[in-house]
Image (cartoon, rainbow, N blue to C red; front, side, top):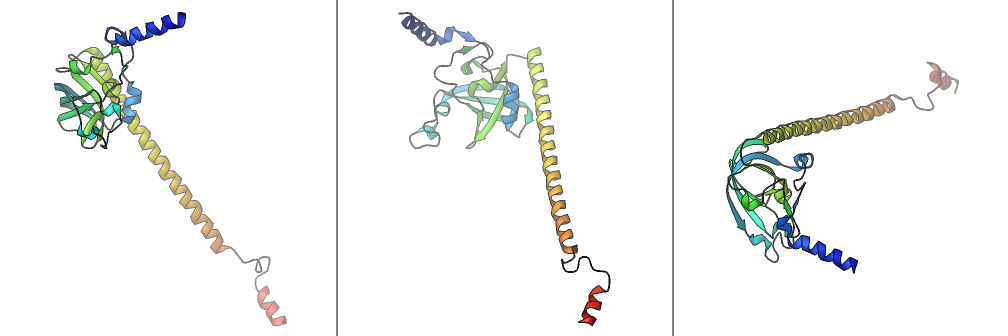
Length: 214
């Protein structure tokens, strides 16, 4: 009886998801920055719900629910690019965050983002720009506030750290290649300069003396 009651309570929570707010819907910046090919700041000028022909049976996204169900398209005027070369007038497809997603208190719903300033973490796919983690990779604000400035400063720092890490890896790869090349050249030189076993241990002129005695 107790298990039935618990199960019914859980179903009630799922059924009334819009009335329940949870913390932490947004994916962390430390996770988003390394994966995003484009990071931009802009203002949402339009939001519409869409369906993609690629989701029809046999299409590219067939069977991928996060790229076929509950999609929105944001029209965004980009004001700043932190990474990548996305156009100033940008169309972004927002994938679904799943059928059991609850409402979030750290971001507005996608259909309520028109007019907001947004920080987007994007990946290109088939001539479209997609948010990395659906709506959970959209940081949104109604106007310029302290929290937004702090978030942008953090993004700048993470991108700079990511660039330095990439440079360090490339330098290490180059150094490793140079060391390996030096070892190969050194080995080759020692082999070319090595004396033959029959000649080792003889004094100068010893070979000529042996030939005269023979």
